[in-house]
Length: 377
Image (cartoon, rainbow, N blue to C red; front, top):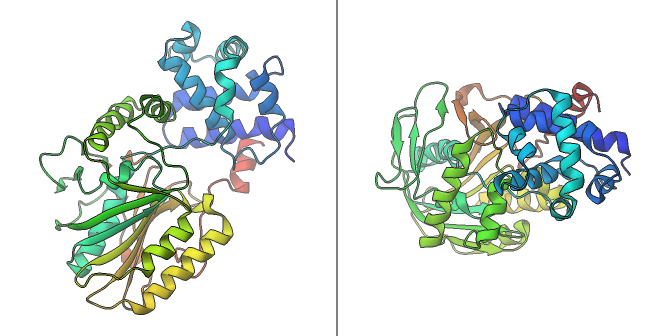
């Protein structure tokens, strides 16, 4: 059971990650909350007495999401000054937040009930780097299977237009163009075709519900306003033609999908981003086993691939890895990226480091002990 010091320390850990990911306003809020939270509100008492592991439970992001929602609603002038970046003194920020936690206790308390669900279309650009690798190898349409789809916005990957350092992928007429900061050489042009796109989430968000859509925006960080604009454009795309998004357990779902007959001339691809650590060892093992079994049946007419964007626990950045069968299926790292896809840095697959083979047991986890020590938790 965590204690009050550990629960406060989780906000310092989140401050570190926000700083690393170029989100200074959100970082400032997290740092101030470490001291601003008191037992004068029900939300404060719940945070300080949190019984679970606060970083794993994303406790800081639950509360920050609620504060961001209050800011977006114009509920508190002082809070709005903080979220606009107009107040930078740490003590003044903490004083404002302490007042907000008491004054808006009833509105903030429900935000602690469940973990934040984020669905960032910007991640699709990094994932597309993996799909380009798959398309280049097999030259076939892709049957895309995504686990941990959240609201299903990355299931629109076949409809977004991407500008990857000057290389254009996707339909020119798309209402959403994703153009991350590109750190390196642009990928060689390659046609990425899709036979089908389908996803699953344990608790899908229906962005056609205005309240659910606004909640999703609240979990995006205020430091990058274009994220909110892109989310709203993606909501409209989803509402106009919803992709297939199932509710269910990721391991059971992928076992079922991999057991289905695979059409000849179609490459089956498992894709996911920033979800692996939340699955737990049992589900991870089942998914590895299902992929390994399917890999034994893969051939040139019915290939199999695994594209994943997951955290590197040492560098605190996301990495895009690809494995593909038939063959030895040595995993290759094709890119590093910001957690929200703000920037993408291609990497040379020939210089892939060890430790990326999920089938054989490698895995990433972002809340590591080095970061805890750095944050003073």
